Amino acid sequence: MSRAEPALDLVTTATLVATAAAMLVRPRHVAAVARSPLLPAAGRQAKAAARGLARQFAPPAPQTRLGRLISSLWPSPAVTQTAGRRLNASAALLSFSVLADSAVQHYRGSFENRAMYTPLAVGALTLGASLFGMTDRRAARHFLRDTIYAVAAVSGLTGLGFHAYNILKRPGGLSWLNLFYAAPIGAPMALALAGFLGRGAEQVRDTPPFRRPGLLRMPAGRTLAAVTAAGLAGTVGEAGLLHFRGAYHDPFMAAPVTIPPIAAGLLSAAAVCPGRAINHLARWWLRLTALIGFAGVGFHAYGIARNMGGWRNWSQNVLNGPPLPAPPSFTGLALAGLAALSLIEEESDG
Amino acid sequence: MVDRYPGYDVLAKRNTVSWNDKTRAVIDQRMAIDPDRHKFFGDREWRTLCAICARIVPQSPLRAGTAPLAAMVDEKMHSNSGDGYRDARLPPMREAWRRGLAAVDTEAKARYGRRFHDLTPVLQDDLLRLVQNGDVHDKAWHDLPAKLFFQKRLLHDIVSAYYAHPRSWNEIGFGGPASPRGYVRMNFDRRDPWEAAEAKPGREQEARAENAHVG
Image 1 (tube, each protein chain N blue to C red):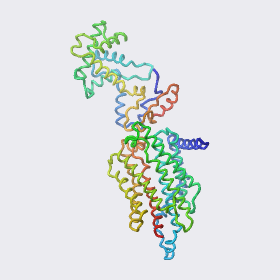
Image 2 (tube, one colour):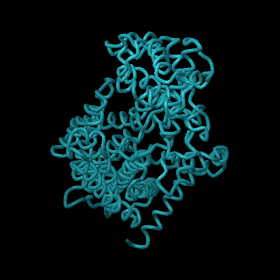
Image 3 (cartoon, rainbow over the protein chains, first blue to last red):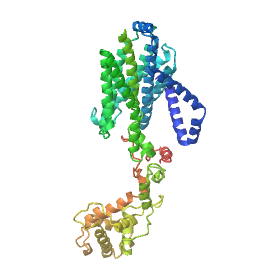
Image 4 (spheres, chains in turn orange, cyan):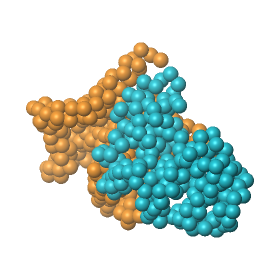
């Protein structure tokens, strides 16, 4: 074990424990901190990030005939930069989802294995790097961000191994019961996806002016579309498994297993044979998918309220009820899909 | 006796989210039972019952508080709230207790010349053992099967009363009613922060410290 690991472990543990202890022992002080001028500063930064995100959604400015001609010959730097930052935003949402979900569920698992702190540390780093990427106006790739994304990808894949081991070591091995109640097999993939998409973001940003962005020796748009479609398929599988465990008792529980698969299908179709109509349709389905990611948080909050004792009994129901931070993964993936789509359009224009 | 859950008090959960109004009302009612009050049994039966309870579940005066077993059994008879099942070879609950207590007392007089509650603990145990084995033949038993009465009524109701009392929950580290807050760590050897901490030998202080925060 290298020297840095225990130190990192200690720092993350101490921070978590201190925050939790402060909230329990001195709730008033925590409230005072929340009202202090520190947070408005953070708020301003978040607003700046949100404005950056909103700008990416804004329709492209009308181009002159000459400009159109030029852009039809070479991709404009603005497109690669927008797509890059949108991918950073997608990685931000995915890593936020991982950070919050693993914090809650690994706390529930009493951090029995020290490796259970990893997604908290890596998720927080990835979230920080992604927020930085969203607000960074410079086009180029950033070494630190790229490294953090690589670490996230590796940690996510390692986590997959740990979760698979957790399932297989239980009596019954690979059974429905263990897939339902042991460590969720799909969860660590969200961190790996944040890493993949983040690395994609950095590479797309790093495209030299008037060169086509490429990833893994393919046009970047197609590679990202494939990664996003696979990620959507995995997330749909996870939601399908756990909503099946919940017996689809609410008709809205069918939404995440019906809408995102169509979005993934349309995105794949747009990657294989792009066209105006298919791109348009894929864009709207991806937007709908992004929306259900947000709506899902609301439904899950309602699910928690429906449990005995409702939100007053939060220390039971937040842990035992539907996971609040899980649905934004769909939003994150949909954002990546939208970025991939805009790159595909750019590629097919030429 | 070794205290396996040092410092654990299930009643510390009373005003936390672990319990709701209904749970509080039920437990308050149980805690308010007067150990000397008897509404169903007569004085004669009451004395025998108290003496039997003291032999079936002896409670150390050194421990804080005792469960009022006789009064809890009396309360059950008074409200006539049965278990929902009964061995058909025994008469209904109330009748079985009345006849059983009278028979134990008569048997004591016939064998030792004294009423059951006046016997020494050793003789009381001897007599209860005879009842348990069905070796009692006084005609006071009539058609009441002594062995079954001991097993399905006497033992069942007294031990149930003992473990229905929060004081006993502290002893066995039981969390009490899980309503509305239940459990979220359901694997083997896992503990929620609102569950009792069991002391490993030599590490009693750790458990005591954790139990101070159960709520």
